[in-house]
Length: 141
Image (cartoon, rainbow, N blue to C red; front, side, top):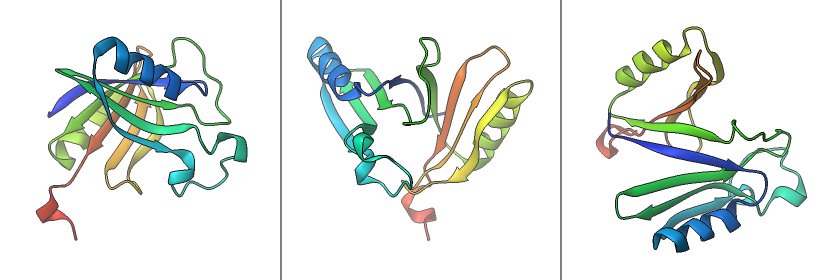
């Protein structure tokens, strides 16, 4: 495995939160994409400027975050995930399969428009996971 990071989800105030954490940890927001920056259909106009994904780095701290999907209810307790970057599709398949046993898959492993092979699930203990594999540049077609 490459690394494990926390992924936070907010109810429309992600930009405010990530700027707050940037200041607290004296870090840098290294990426921020809004819903309007991405080809997702069906996002309402009032949600277009909300954060689809952002990443904050501060020394050895990495926080990733987004606003929830506009049709999703955010409850305290479901507003975090553990995000793992993996070294191979085989490793990703194996870990995803094991974590899914007795749990609930919310997004099957699949190629995404942002260039990663990605999937999400909640394990049998209620922990939310995001598994990502980015092919090395020389493997891409």
